[in-house]
Length: 182
Image 1 (cartoon, rainbow, N blue to C red):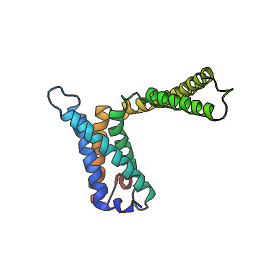
Image 2 (tube, rainbow, N blue to C red; image 1 turned 60 degrees about the vertical axis):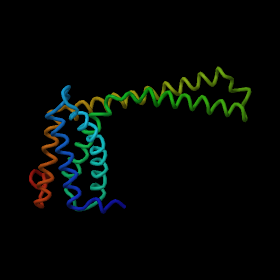
Image 3 (cartoon, one colour; image 1 turned 60 degrees about the horizontal axis):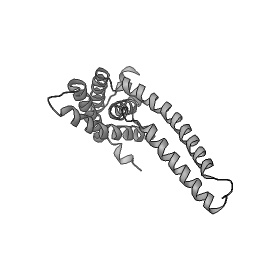
Image 4 (cartoon, rainbow, N blue to C red; image 1 turned 90 degrees about the horizontal axis):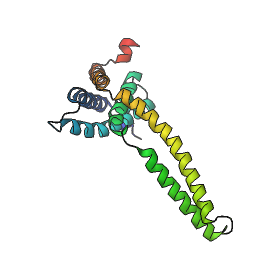
């Protein structure tokens, strides 16, 4: 379906753009004087998402070296997690799930089980569901934050960007990192 994206100049262009953004983030970092870092982070979020998508497409297509897929996915994660690791989404999602559970049980009590589902029972069940969802998502959030801190560390992001640019140049020369080191 997306196999037309896995053509030669598109993959190299995505690697080059992602590499340059990663190097820019690695060099500039957080700057109070300019908004270059904010623009690079904003672009990195979308380019990183597209890089992960391209990595998945390359994984499903044959004929591409594994190094291209690995570089696309790892650098894409580094660019995305640079922004998303600070978002506390476990609490937000658990409150939404708890509220929807309570509302769904309230509607169910009006329809069929009016004697069993009292307001106290509905609140207790909604809070239990909310806490279970929160603890599961908090573990996932902390894991993502840990790996995000590693992958989005500026020197690592700089070298991942260099690796993406090298992979793009090697692909243009009909080679790859996998052909050299693999």
